[in-house]
Image: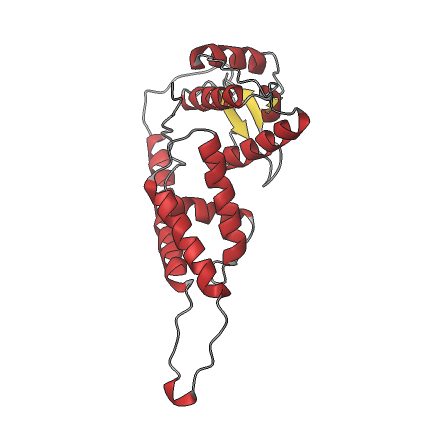
Amino acid sequence: MSMKYEVHTEAFQGPLDLLLHLINQYEIDIYDIPVAEITEQYMTYIHTMQQLELNIASEYLVMAATLIAIKSQLLLPNQTIEPEDEEYEEDPREDLMRRLIEYRKYKEAADQLKERELEANKIYTRPPVEFEEAPAQKQVVQGDVSIYDMIAAMNKIMERKKWEKPVSTKIQRTEIPIKQRMDEVMTQVKERPDGIAFDELFPIPSRSHIVVTFMAVLELMKGKQVYCTQEKHFDELMIYYMR
């Protein structure tokens, strides 16, 4: 029985979003994209998504093919051109660069509009009320963790588990209901008020267990029962109970 899982999250916005994430994460100059490096990183994400049995939209695969084609063009040796026949040859990266710059422009504009909407929603009027003591406001900082940060963490976990414990030669099919795993994860998170490392939620080096646990965490985050933080790029992810 297939365990395909359709992820619906605002962070999953398409291949340009993933490429922009990689550019920001590795501090790459968008005007001088190292295609070989970014293609390798992009394919790592695609491979991890496939391992997690996430449904990958065809546009991700089209972008993968585009990156490989650009990489191949750049690897071709420069041909000697006679001066009279010399013409401007467009850098194969230019079209991708233009698309990324345009996407980033609209993404930033959308983020600004969203911030204004949130600010506007905080403005309201009500009759004056006297308080003996102002109630304490609880601040919850959720960090800036995207689905791609979580997939990167999953790649590290799956690689580490693979080496720590060899895969059994016997096929062991373990069907774990997502709801059951969600309850188990919630119990773990509640027991750790200071947060639990994302890695600690994956004690069993079984792909089916890892996949179901990942799905359970996504569902809990979607339901605003837990939240995830990361201090800076490549740091360990921490999961907290949403009080």
